[in-house]
Image (cartoon, rainbow, N blue to C red; front, side, top):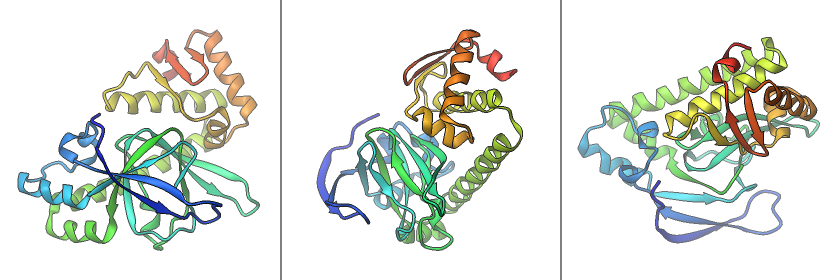
Length: 252
């Protein structure tokens, strides 16, 4: 992916932060982005591309462990992951946190805020990442003018509903082995869609995050991965996962 040129910096103060967070802002060009086949609407007219690039005017860096936004923050923009990866997290009333999603390059973020104008979850960078910022009022205006953009927004919303419904099925009906296998296969497929290796990837989620996402304990996740390794299905070396027998994972 082409790295955008930093043109300015902005400083924001996050709720509960002890010090301001400095977030580099960069120019964002859809035409030069390696993830454009995932983000850009199909059928977009050539003369609409400059409008889209003017709309998505900046990219922001998000350092590992930094929140892009937090639950309760006012909603004013959607985001597209330009590089890296983030997790979405919801907090229970007792303070426990639940990982609700893994967002990779090309994935949208922030759709949860459309309904109430407030974000219902937090988005936290799993590694040094960057996102394109899409001001929602300007996006709505462009959707009224460009049918392809409106169709793309609707598809993104539908895709998120389908992914969340699939996750409910994983949590509600699959065994521990099936859950971990389904997760690894999902990451494998999504990496392939992005032009990366589907058989070998760095899994930026910690084992604890995986457990939270899959409704399992840290110990169960670790034991399951070790069992997969002994059976010759995968080779796991820290965050590096290599899938050896993809059909074996599919048939668990």
